[in-house]
Amino acid sequence: MKRKSALSAILESKCPQCRQGDMFEEPIYKLNSLSNMPEKCKVCGYRFEREPGFFYGAMYVSYALSVGVFLASVFLLYVVFSDPSITVYISTIVSASLLLYPVTFRYSRVLFLHIFGGAEYQPPS
Image (cartoon, rainbow, N blue to C red; front, side, top):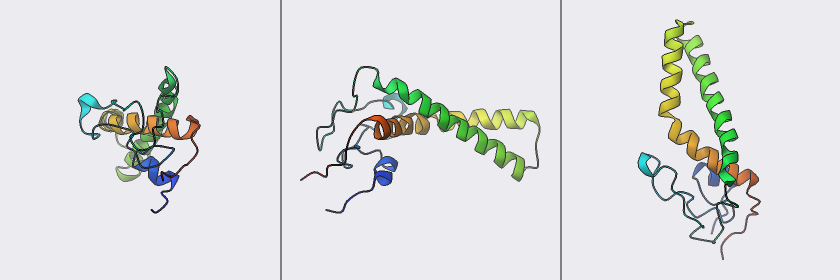
């Protein structure tokens, strides 16, 4: 079996330990079950929520991702539309933030778990 890189495991929302098990139960476009995660990885048994309230720390990662969306939106508007009015900036940034909320929510959890979860890569046998 080919070894999966940490980056590809993050992009595919896979377990930080085996890099094969899914971290979320439903696809990202099912908004009513956006935060549903299994308790443990179905492949290796790694416990995703390390302790009660573990993912509260992911809010900081979510904030950083949201700032990135904000800055990218401002930069694109400034460059492509030659500095439009403040109303265009506000409506575009709010729309982009709302549309990308499911992505920033999930990837903040994925990144937080991969960085602070304490897992070492152990390919399943």
